[in-house]
Amino acid sequence: MMQWGGSMELYHLRSFITVVQENHLTRAAEKLHISQPAVSAHIKALEEEVGQPLFYRTPSGMRVTTAGILLCRQARVILREVEEFIGMSEDLLNKIVGTIRIGLNRNAEFLRISDLYRELRRQGPDIEIVLHQSISGTIIHLVEAGELDCGFILGDCGTEGLSSLSLADFRLRIVGPVALEKELACADLVTLADLPWIGIPDDCPYSRIMEKYFYSQGLQPRTGVVADQQAAIISMIQSGVGLNFMLEEEAVRAEKQGLVALWPGEGFPIALSFIWRTGESDTPLIKAVRTAILATWPEANVCSC
Image (cartoon, rainbow, N blue to C red; front, side, top):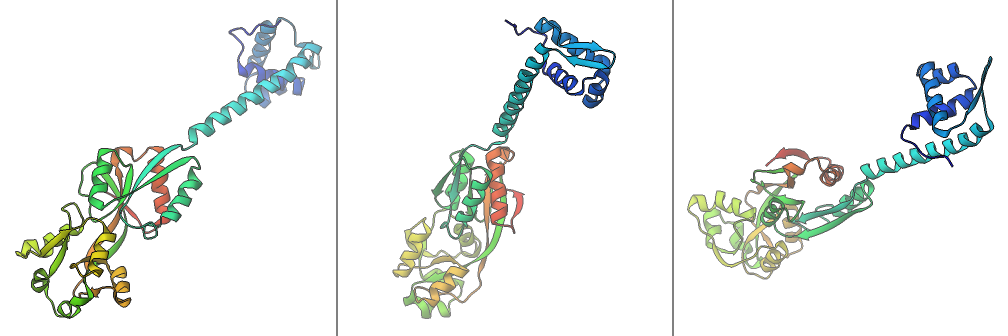
């Protein structure tokens, strides 16, 4: 029985198969792009390994022996299986697997989650996608802490160690209950501060607008209740609780439907961004989700927080 020794190499088998095909050392060497002595050495080493001659040397070239014919068949099988093995390992190396945890600060339709899902599935069918609904400030904290991998936010992330894609620019509008339509129609910021408001947490992006346009001017809007979820805020506005912000497109649509009253004053600019930890920018999962985001939001721009 042939024993597998320590000197046999795959290139010995390649040289062996090529010499069988060409019946000539020189032609085999040319085909393999190596020297004739190298091919001859490979054949000699292989013959020593198997313990019997593989070729008859003739004046016209090389003629394979009966044993050589049988072993050549097996050598082809071995090389084919090795190539399949290498191909499989490369596929595994390039295959994107794992769980990506994404924070959502708005509804799935607004954030184009269906399109994002399809793009991620196209890149990595085995990627598990976990969606977590929260407000922008909480999403920033969760990404920073490693409890989320990435997420959507409104406003600046303002946190060292996070990178972001600016996806789109929007404007916020102040809206209130329909019962306050007349008051809103002629109100300035001072008058608005005297009307009832729905309070927002400090880590909500709307709080920065309140700071810039109200608190820094010495204006303290009256708040009787605090809410951190957009759906709850909109519901309370419609129920007559007080004023707050809505994205302009949503605010105009809600006003036309008779659900809210819209302050006619200026809108407040705010950006929608996608964030992740800078140190993980080149990991397969984050690269995959960034590529999917760019395909879903082609107007996006990359930056650091």
